[in-house]
Length: 104
Image (cartoon, one colour):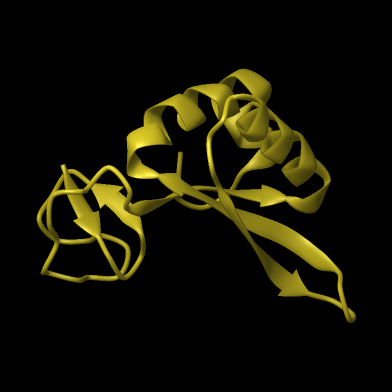
């Protein structure tokens, strides 16, 4: 398994298929790893479940519309908690209904 520092994604190859970076390394437990891109309406639910399970996360808004309105969010978690966060996400939502793009 390899970690792309630029995309914050975990890959199974030494080259990132998302950004094309060639210098990937083994992920470390505390590396910030991309989890999912999710609609604003569901972001609060995911945040609550991660918090309930003591999984730290970073939530970044995308799709600016007005002064404080974000359309969608990207969630990131530590690599050491990525598998558990992925399981929790999949229990909560159907991937096809909620998320889009790469992740989980």
